[in-house]
Image 1 (cartoon, rainbow, N blue to C red):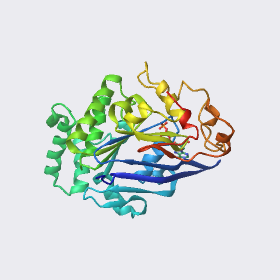
Image 2: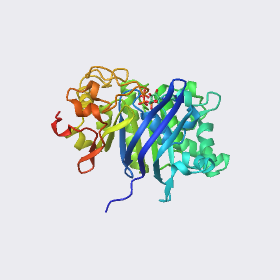
Image 3: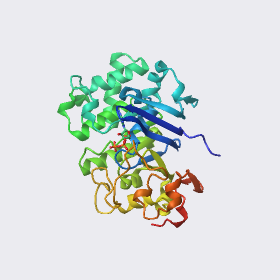
Image 4: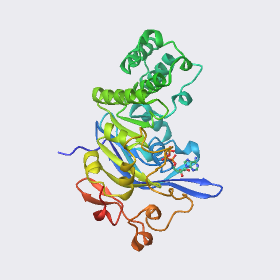
Length: 334
Ligand SMILES: Nc1ncnc2c1ncn2[C@@H]1O[C@H](COP(=O)(O)OP(=O)(O)OP(=O)(O)O)[C@@H](O)[C@H]1O
């Protein structure tokens, strides 16, 4: 029996009004995250990964953006479907933290420098559970223990600047998980960390996922990380999902030329992409204010022909649960 996914995003369109015109950052984006599983959202810098995750959290408005179309359905902790985009803001504030929570790339900018880390975790617990100060403090120590911070009874009094980058990211994860959300959105949570610490944070997320049973939306430049951590993958290019499916299937049978290019960039380097850009395919993604009429990848694609430039391809199912936005997918091989 197939269970409803924990998160379902369908035909999402998010735009920003800028002095130079309307930027369509995310267009017709669809994917789902199964319960207890991880979806890796991967793509070059500017492909729309962060805007997608901020749309799910209903936080794009703060940056001047708006979700113009689509649906986002989240299964709450009680199993009921939450229509995220139509929720009043007051209820949305409860959903954030309780049902879904986000960890950002740079923990230092998200942590408050003048509060101890214990107070910051406790505050999040109190906000959502109405726990007493004492209970919240005790739970904060437990959360620090859970995310592998040594001597948590002592560290709970530390301020963010007293911790290393890796430890701060653990604190961010502790805050995000303090209310046991069903969905954790992790936006490049390891990019700013050195390789050893990156591996530890990935291990931590995996372990917590197994313990808590949460679903994870993991955003990264790095397809190598996706291979390690994700069950499903959605590849984004220029604001669209160009390929989506189970990780094993997509690694064995990539059907979009861009995915093949991403894969070619994995070996050797620890990041795959240099500065978030793809070294193995010439050129750069189109300017979002001036995209090509047909397939957005056509200008960089060795397989492109006239039909590719004439009309933008639809996302089509090419194998069970495997979707591709390319009219020449049958000719694509690794
Ligand atoms: N506040 C904003 N105003 C205008 N345009 C924006 C804004 N935020 C994002 N965009 C545009 O939306 C597009 C997608 O950006 P987004 O940050 O989602 O990419 P990304 O894939 O997450 O990149 P990175 O990996 O560098 O974080 C980009 O073209 C970006 O310029």
